[in-house]
Image (spheres, rainbow, N blue to C red):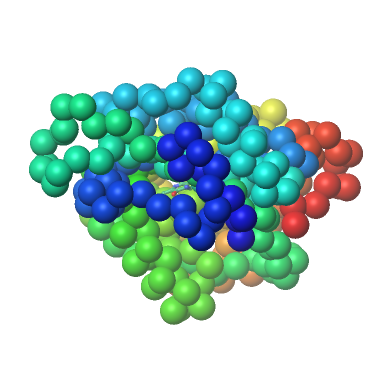
Length: 294
Ligand code: PMP
């Protein structure tokens, strides 16, 4: 765990890092966040994260409190102060502190906090054997494209997954189409060999890992199709996996009680995971195959 956190312009001891009780993030989930991976002391796809942060802020009409340069300096400094080279930083920006009122306060100052986290090792068995996902109804709001701190449905979904012995919960919309995981994007490979993920509309968060994996898949010449897919199609898929900043490319070999394909991670999944790990290794300045997350 972090020794130091960043709170509104200061590095403070983690144990005494606090915000005001009338922070609108606390009362209304009126704020946004980003999680950015660190590999070998370097941020992974930082520009894409900062662009998405900008978009989330402007969709909520929260003024950007710091320049990209200042933010990068703070996050880098935070990682270094905590001695973290492989892991992630969590950055949260809320609209500010004001007496509780739904209407936007006129002169609230956005609150900026950040914590750094050491990499959690990913079990080798999870990568080699794949993990399980369950399917649950998507009970979130209509603007899942905004990376807001309103994460109660995600917490409920992830808890349901854990209680079912699963790694992730894939959420489905009213028409029975998968939207995404609680903290990851969902992908399948059809029996015909199409790599499929849902288009980045308001129904999902456009994952940075998703964007990078799309580029890797195209460069590898895989047949990539962006379209919604149903629960039924997911159960009948040849392969399935999720992507996220901290899971990278994680094979899903069981959805609900149905084994996916032959129950082992498939060739598309393995290829894309290797390519994504090589992308991280390159950022870390290490030779592919030598760099380790934990
Ligand atoms: N979807 C949701 C709902 C998420 O919370 C996340 C991770 N925060 C993702 C997808 C994956 O996004 P990224 O690849 O940027 O981590």
